[in-house]
Length: 471
Image (cartoon, rainbow, N blue to C red):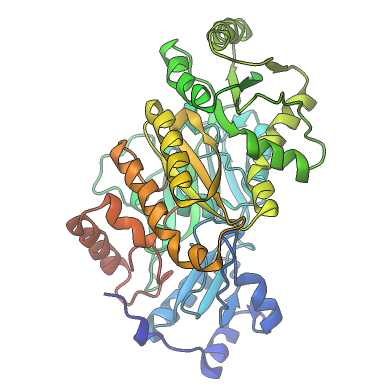
């Protein structure tokens, strides 16, 4: 049961306690400065925290959590604020715990292909530092240039290369976590195999800051692939671009990325983001961005030839093969810019749907049919290789009344379609604040109750990220 009425408002005595072990720069009390933390990338939501605290090490996090727990002050952990489900918003006020000063790469274990890092490190910086050492951390969400490792852990982020390498959870060996009462634990061990007790590490990943505060993570790493090939394939029918996805895997080819981009998404990106121009013929409805990687260039070339043969059996336009690094970067910039481009074009709601990849054509067809029924336009793109389709519903000419109150019905229908197709309602953006009312689409009352009971064990006063996921 949610304990909203029990939450304490922050007073001078609370500020005085925090001033006892934190510097003035670590405490943000000014309202204008606090407003920088009242929103994320989710729609147009704003919740003002009463106080923002910027810890620099685990011991400080422990003291902050223990005090908030004792006094029942809401404590919401925040990374870079790039989330798309409202997961880091202070919906009940209280404290925002900003992790951006806990941003160190603590250790690289070259012998064992491991790295220990703090949650405030930017994902791309982590990857680029490793790449200089010949090491590879594959998860790369679209916001990798700004998002934090901690946010990736909270949402179990994936990104384009999840299709071959997996998502965040597949690379985590061990976590240092501060619990609601201030206790500090390690959840696992720095080994590749671990059948010792319950898997608390995996329980924490994707829990959106509702069970504990991650302060360190130990990742397993891979050797950096030496070669890659990238191509952009245009399709005259969007459903063909979805249908070919399963066929690619039947060839025995596992791309390192396989991205679907609807025509409107590309048009928006080229309109609002300079330097990514791609010629698109008038009859093209969608594109696939396909990457192959590995350490054997001959093998990659053979796979590329077989891929070309398959693509040519569909109603495709001219396939663009990116050879130079600058061309590859341009195409990836195009893909990673889609979310921002849609946001600039219109007020929108983004639904993070996911189904089995062979069902992707049916999902796309169903989304468009629901849009036609309810009179809204959608722009779709996403990680086709793992069936993860981002559905962006544009406000356009829709009335405020329908946008605020009527849209929930068709969104529920989209999620019900996902469930019918063997999928679920979020692949990598999480549930957070905006999707929790739809949890009953995919979970029974008993299943939701079990999750709430787990929350109760870790956080009996419900101070950690309250109002999210299921409470």
